[in-house]
Image 1 (tube, rainbow, N blue to C red):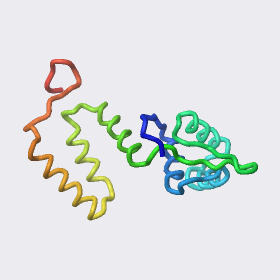
Image 2: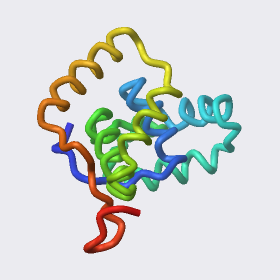
Image 3: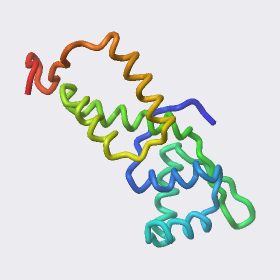
Length: 143
């Protein structure tokens, strides 16, 4: 796949990308069938989303006879990492820790995921400041 570039993907487009990443490639008819079952979407909606993702550079299409096969041009993990980084960049930095704690409390995590998080947090704790300042307003340190 190509080098990761920042591509903004809508919520609906994420659903299409998740299927494409999972399958590796998908025809428009396969995608329409999957999305009808998963999301209740009509074929026209799916084709619109596929077209948008091609324009954004997240997918490429190859014509095989009368059908098109779609392939992801961006990797899944870097795309997810970029989306989360962008989201957390919009939040008050003073509240990011609590937001993460709330999120972790709601998610289904494997034993391996939890062990990995514990390792990352233990390492991070060695250099973490006592508090994180608010960054909502210039010159302010708390909300």
